[in-house]
Structures are given as C-alpha cells and as structure tokens.
Image 1 (cartoon, helix red, strand yellow):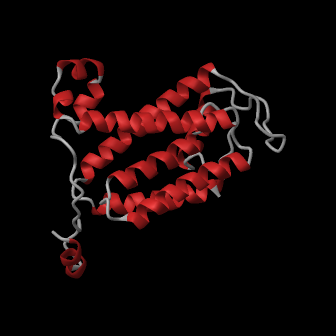
Image 2: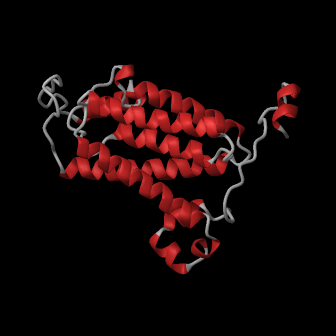
Length: 214
C-alpha cells in the first residue's frame, strides 16, 4: 500500500512536471535532491547494519560473489525501482527508509510547484505521504527510527535547498560557491523563486494548448 501511495504521487508529480513552464529547473532540483539523499543513504547503509525488523522477512546469506553477479543484481534493483510491486526484494537497507524518502520528496515537490489555491492537490499529496509512512510502519518493513530519520533528512534538505535557491544573496555569495558547488552549478541561471506557470509542451491538440496557456 505504501508503494501504491508512491505511485499515485509519482503520477501527479510527472503531470505537474510535464505542464510546468520551468520544467527543466524542476527536474534539475529533483535529481539533485534525490541523488543527495540517496548518497547519504548509501553511506548510512555502509556504516550501519541492522537486523530485519520483523520475523516475516526472510533474508538469505550472501549470494552474489563475483562482480558480474553484483552488477546484474544492481541493475535488477534499479530497473524495478526497488519496489516489491515489481518483484524486487532487498535486505539490510534499513537505515534509512528509501520509500519514505521518495514519497516525502514527491509530496514536497507537488506542494511547492503548484499554486497555493490548489488545496485539494495539496491535501491529497499530504494524505498520501502520511498514509504511505503509516503503511511502512504497519507492515513492519522498517524500524520507526528509520522512517523518522528519512522524513527528517528529506524535509530538511528540501527546505534548506529551496531557501538558498530563493535567496539571490545566498546564490551569488562566495561561501555558497565553495561549500555548495553542485548547488551553484544547478542554480546558476535561476534568479529567485520559480513562478508556478504552466503551458502545454506540444503543438497539438490546440484545444488543450489554449486551455492551459502557451
């Protein structure tokens, strides 16, 4: 059920991304934040090994000895987006919850890049986020601390990134370029907050193009 909430949020976000006039900026920010959080997750998994959080989880011993087998396993996890809905089952990646990271980031991006008057979309997004976290905990797929840390790190990174991005003085400061070189690279052509403007990215059908705006 948590993955179903994530799939719905992902579809909503993809629709927002498709119709947003500044979709390239949104995509850059999404990739930047997602990559940063999952890099931190890789580090925590490497230094912290936890036992399975429930007896219903069956984990076998080391099965992928040679490099080729490890690469095949990595591709299988990547192509299946790490979801059990696609037949991917993993063990040992408990610190911290990747599912919580994804649904929380999707929720924040949907609410940030849609107009404040879209109350239904914002409410739906938050409900899916909270229900997704609840289902993760109810299924005993993660420890509570995993979910809490994932939510905290994801929300803080999102807010800090957008605080820097929305303040031109921070963007142009020498300190920001030294400490956040990736941020400076991705935000070099962005001046302040991104307006929530929409347009149809295709020439046809003209009815939709006129309805949404050029």
